[in-house]
Image (cartoon, rainbow, N blue to C red):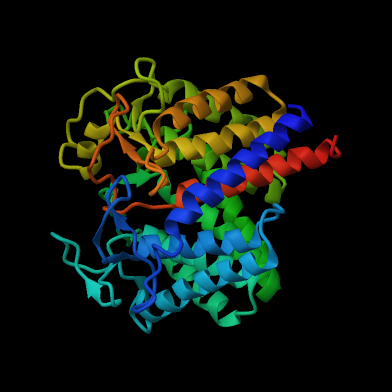
Length: 431
């Protein structure tokens, strides 16, 4: 791709990040009175319907604002970066005060009211309903600590991280909104652990150099787990396998989550780069292409939320797994979700940057055309994206995973896309 075109792309994505997303969220998301952030907006962003605070989202906000302050792309002034760090600190303070079940109990509460008091999810009898919430807190705090002089924040993140590893090792954790019984394993666990371990690693470079090698070994182990146990000989990454690391011939065992596969593809590329496993790259590129081809909706365009191993609606026998909540969630297989497409947009560009493969560039352009025909909110007074769509692209006012409008995936991907473009421009020497 020529330098002039790259520069045009950089300008486009910078404008998207600044004028479509940051202008929506700042200051709209900030709860100046009680701390933390609000994001229970309608799908189109027109109304705030609740001031409840999901710890999952609070950690994500901290990560995004910390990353905006730290981005290697030359797109923000020093003053802007300081403002982003101030916003991140706003979330850090709220989380360190409210997110734990008890001061000596290193598990995160899943849901808080606007003042930070614990709330039980409807139908749930415990406060720590998802280890994923803990993971997003670790990622956010570690990212913030790496950009600041805050050893106490790093120590908090590290203790919570150690608690997560212990619970996962003992198989003593919950995974709302994607619950599974103990007889099954979810790809999402090694996937998210590899990603937050990178955040811990980067913070440990500053505060805890003795831990750096351990963090790298952990990253290597989590990514190795995914590649060894969840990827079949045809290159499909199964979202669910048995607790004994076996594939199983049921609809739950024979489906893929294209968005997760494509998101994890760049997580795995990060791990391969940091741990010296260049031999993994070809496998990762192939499974990314497999997810794109299998997950693409040939009738309406776009990527499906879930797909069978051969594409289209997940089908097959479900005997013995009828009561698994994830089996019921497969009914939303045709949904066209914002995060799936923003992750795919970054991964295809990242793979193109790595390989110069026109196939990845073609996929990136195909995704771009679909995304910008569908997701941007047409109301300039609001901005952002209308994030949840039906299979045919019509807006859907329904809950997918959590009842929130979440900026995490899109803004993270836009930052990474911009950084990737600048790296490609640098390789061309400004010509």
